[in-house]
Length: 193
Image (cartoon, rainbow, N blue to C red; front, side, top):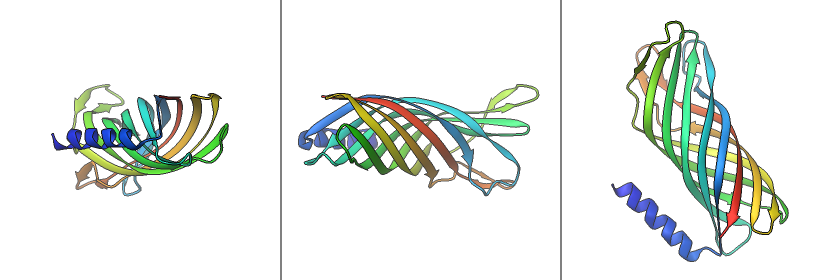
């Protein structure tokens, strides 16, 4: 209960001090997999993650703080099984924007993710079952976006993001500690309000 209150206070405080606010939808495509501690051959899981983003511009046209909500698909495949792990993710990021009409925007940040569901499917028999995993995940990311303003108040961007988890999502005697990794490309629109 404390976390939603904290996020609400953060967003309202940011609105108060922001010179400009941008909101908009986003759509991410990419690959999710585990770190290298895994002892068997794995195949990355193709992911599709919709969401929305909010950017708060503070006292400058260069520096912004951002957040949002994303339905985040993760997991991986092996020769015999597919693991689907879905989260509701709240990113918090700091960005530097260079350029006026055409821009580049490197960012760093952290994701706080809450488990939505987790399923394991047998690739041969197609039997699906739930499996135990951590209910929250904390990860860090670095991203690089480029985009342009369609009109003065509407921008389009493409973003490459690399994500690594701090917290293992599965502890196993056979596998060890497994952490999420993800590489995604995000397409989005931002509207100035």
